[in-house]
Image (cartoon, rainbow, N blue to C red; front, top):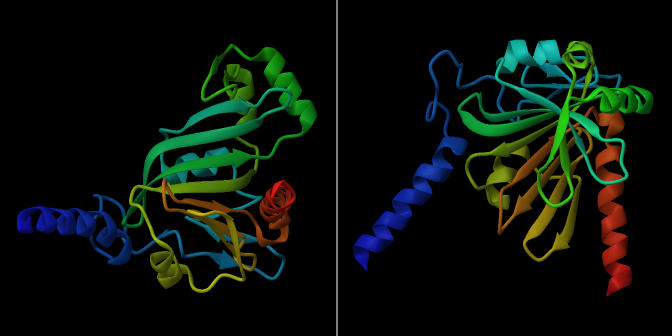
Length: 228
């Protein structure tokens, strides 16, 4: 029993400590104290920068340069939706934090429709969601499109206390399920989902566009209240 408890404690330390203490989990060529998830810079125009990227301004070319060339770019579409242009990293070192990263790019409905018509192929992902492979000509266009949002899924599981230690007190706390709470930081353009049964999710937008994160959560909360 003592051995089992010691093993559990060791595993917890391995998972949580890299997120809490600088210098642990560092990778060669990566400054462990820069571009960390809680290092968000804002400006007087309602803009923000994180990981060296400026939301609403930096392009896919900038993302490749700063986060690495191994990004998988495609259109992700739900049934009866135009879809979104996304770039996916299976693992990125954000300072000393390892994470999956998804970057969403800004495109008009007309651009999305045209890209979908020229797409090379599509395949099912989860449920009815489809991943659509873009034509090379359209990939060249995406290189110059500005990024709209960044989503980060840390490799370690975080609890709410850890999030508060790094990011501070949120302006709003929305409990949408027993084990799922959204911590909202409108001044930073940040929504953090703390999931007791799954992976945490950090979503960044420019603070002036924070309603794009908050409104869907309020709609879900209202629907839950009506159902009850």
